[in-house]
Image (cartoon, helix red, strand yellow):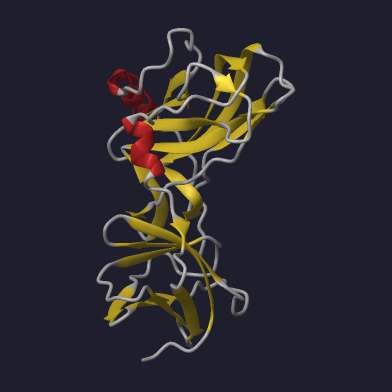
Length: 287
């Protein structure tokens, strides 16, 4: 059951956030990017572009939205769980430039009292691509982003910032350069398509679902993060049973579920930092 936690800003929390804000650090922007970062209550947010230029072409240009959080605070995955909202960007870009959607790294389960949130503590980078059409005007281009978020601990505080950076647009293709360690870290945590030959099925039970994942070998760790709200009861433990060719998770259904879903959509995280998008289909799951 999704619960809307009260949005409060208690005065002593705000005073504490001001004194701690200086401790928040983020990756250094280009010298001209003085408006690309903003320090807010309990976090610092920054707009990052990996290269010194934006190149025209089909591959696009790697960029990201970075959050550095104070200890004990978190921001949210695309399905926030029982409370919260994910970060979002509203763009103002020159003609010929477009920004792709934010990509969400694999999240963690974050218990907050009786609730369960899905999100990120400490730091997170949401990668995305900026595309420059062949007809885009060459030369300096201002990228303006209105960013909104909800940062939570025992209370939640909404935030917003208007970020801006400038990059010259140049004719592509872009030169091949290695990604920075920060981008490597979070790009490697993006969920991947389920490998060919693996399969996910689920079977409804009176109290929920049995989700079976066949990877071809025994699995000993798994957590399922539903993409859809009001399907799985988020705070309930996920009972794990290894099988010779994978794993079975027992999930409790949400109290507000409206019938049996056609698919069980979400991300499943396995040992070895493996994370996969799945769309489990109905089927028999062995006891």
